[in-house]
Structures are given as structure tokens and as C-alpha cells.
Image 1 (cartoon, rainbow, N blue to C red):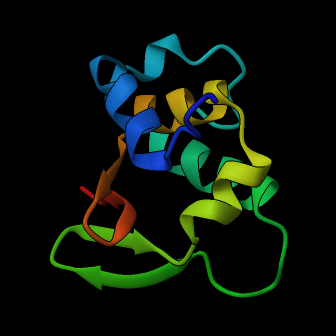
Image 2: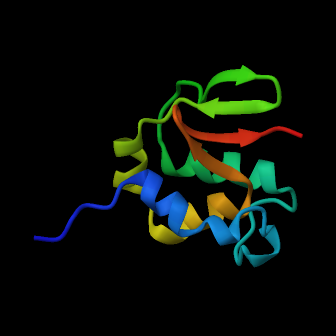
Length: 97
């Protein structure tokens, strides 16, 4: 039986693409942080805030792992990495500087 891949494992798989926004093929914005927010908004439908907390220079997103896994492709996760989104103990997050 194949093991289900976790969101953390996908982000780890694409760590070499972190902050390589020039590798994103179809940009929604010329700004990586804006592109990431638009991509997340398109993937995760709803009216609630995408952001759960802001601490210092870090935004933590209000998106459960399983919800993002259901709607995203590996390419989406890779593009999020390319925009500077990373996975930490609370889920996905992004520096805002």
C-alpha cells in the first residue's frame, strides 16, 4: 500500500525551490507574496480569513493541511515554496518582509 504524502513532506520535497519566484510559470502577480495569497485564495474557497496569526514578520495561515492537500497539486505546493511559503509546526506560513 502506498503511503499518503503529507503536506509537510511536499514542502520538504520542494525546499530547493524556496524563494525561486522566477521559476513560477503562470504568475498571478509580479510580487511573490501577492501571488501566494492569490493562489491560496483560488485553492481554498470560502469567506473566512486565510491568515490565522501574525507574529513578528511571520504570517501563519488558517488552512488545515488536509484541506489544502485535497485541492492542491504538487505544482501548487512547489509554486507556494517558490513564493516563500514554508511549513512549520503550526502549518504553512510566510515571512512578510
